[in-house]
Image (tube, rainbow, N blue to C red; front, side):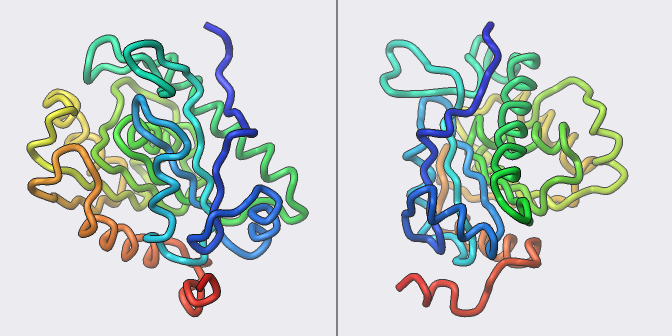
Length: 240
């Protein structure tokens, strides 16, 4: 399999919840923290960027396209790995995907005079797994991680011990009756997250495999608590 990479030309950006071009977003990163959005299987970069107006102002949001183009019956859809056995992701591929995101962050930071400031992650489903995989590759790089209807991969990575020692803040929101995520994946996640993070776990009955308004409100509260550089005052007002 060819080396995976993030396509920088298709990233969708927002600043203070307002859609933006790359130049304006990079300029705003001198002042605001970055929130990286990681979509689910079969989706694309245009999906989670729609949440930006509902998330806290004071962020630059970057919605990435997963690096693997999926074939029929999926149309215009991408994944972080190909699903072969549900609940058991292809570990070498997801490690490549995590390394691709980290390489993109390095390149982005190098384009900024002062480099990147704080970075938060929000992922849905497969993208939620990518949140934890990024932490496992770079345990101290992120201020907050948000997992929506996602799960954790198996295996051991060098960063796991550091995560268990430092227990960074992670948010996990889901429906216990999620029809997509397998029980074996949920059980693995229930064991892993409390050991490797300071976990905020929220259950949202009836949302199935989705993100609800109640979850968005809880995510906002979590981000305000965990990202010190987040501009609380007048951020949304600036965007009106």
